[in-house]
Length: 234
Image (cartoon, rainbow, N blue to C red; front, side, top):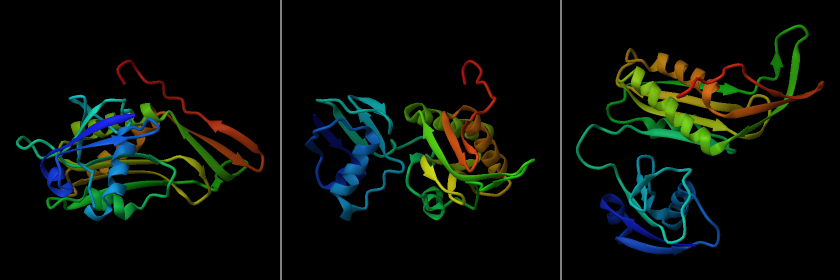
């Protein structure tokens, strides 16, 4: 698979060229291509938090796949208009670092943040109490990223003064005490909706983002299913 890559503005200056040609043996998506560029130019410490990507002159997102002969453009947000605050949406099998996520969200205007982190619970209260050995998380990944983006948009619509938003979901085998999900947001002041937005965000993720967990314990295993049925348009 061959693609032509165009660099503009900051990225053209850092990389030192306006275009390159690349060949790949296997198809890759936008997220994988950005990781490829980070590894190709490690000394440049490229930050793709707010990068814009287009494929064949249409905006593209992390889960979009590149095709043979594609023209891929890498550029920062277009000058002019309102300030663009960071949005981090990730599905990962790797342990996430809360401090690193917050560092990506913080801007000079940031004065506060609210972070929710969920963990694998070993003991669940009830009669009788239930002990969990581990959880297995899986997701319909392409749809999950789109729905995470929808949740972030809804958070901003309801609380327009919040700045950065992050939603990070772990996948795979997770032992008790392991972080499973992070929902975070930032704002200039603590009274600008960050607490409410973070609570709304985790509740909404549980409603519409297609992620499931299988609970495995001493008494067997089962898939944990919710009871919320999305309405048309959600």
